Structures are given as C-alpha cells and as structure tokens.
Length: 144
Image (cartoon, rainbow, N blue to C red; front, side, top):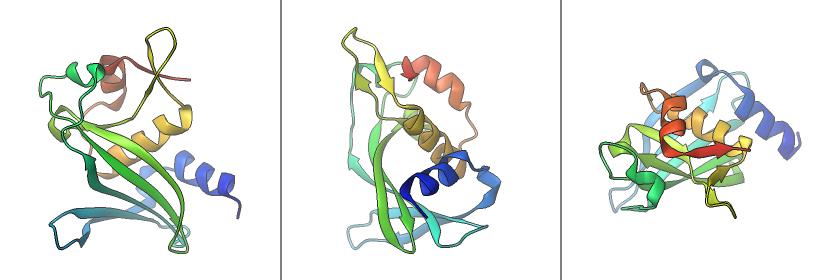
C-alpha cells in the first residue's frame, strides 16, 4: 500500500467505518491521545492529541463565541508506524476541529483539501456534533 493509498482511504472513508477509542493512552503528565482504528483494515489507524500549543491564537480563531483554541497533532499510522502527521486546531472551546491554515499572499486563510478532509474526519470521530461546514465558513478558512 502506498502513502497515497493510505491517505485516500483515511480521507475518503465514512466515519462509521472507524472504531473510536477514547483516551486510549494517558501520559504521566496527564496528556491523553485519542485513537480510531479502521474497521475494514485494522492495520490503519488515526491518533490525535495531545495539545501542541495551548492557547493557540490567530485572528481566525477569534470568530467564535468561546475564543479558546488549541493546536493538536493528528497522526496516521499503518501497521503501527507513523506515516503521516499534520496539525489541527480545536476551536470554540473544543466544539470543532479545523485545519491549521496558512496565510495567503492576499491575506486569506487557506488549507488544502486534504487538510480539510482530515480535520472533518477527526471532528466527526471525536463526537463533533457541531456543523463542521459552518465552522469553516465562520473561520474564513478556504480549502484549495
């Protein structure tokens, strides 16, 4: 399986195809990691957390009622080996997980389609009951 095959599987899959395991690992400092295992192929898993930067503050994180945001790692593992890592941002006091955008030359906030899909997957797996698309719109992040 190639890295592109793995990414396409993770990013194109239905969240119901994942088995979510809350707080599967807790470090001595109290930080926890979440995990989800892909049911059709248990050699594939996602892990996210702990917090990387807390508080995380950029102008786009100020567009929500609760202004607390924190950045987190999200890892894709294949046979237990880390094959891909990205950063996401938990916004609005933990109500939504969004991609960490880059600032465009025109002042807009941009994320790749892959980053958006990964954030959408993690948001859904971690119980995101808030509307991901509405949070993307309010943040001003545009997926390109």
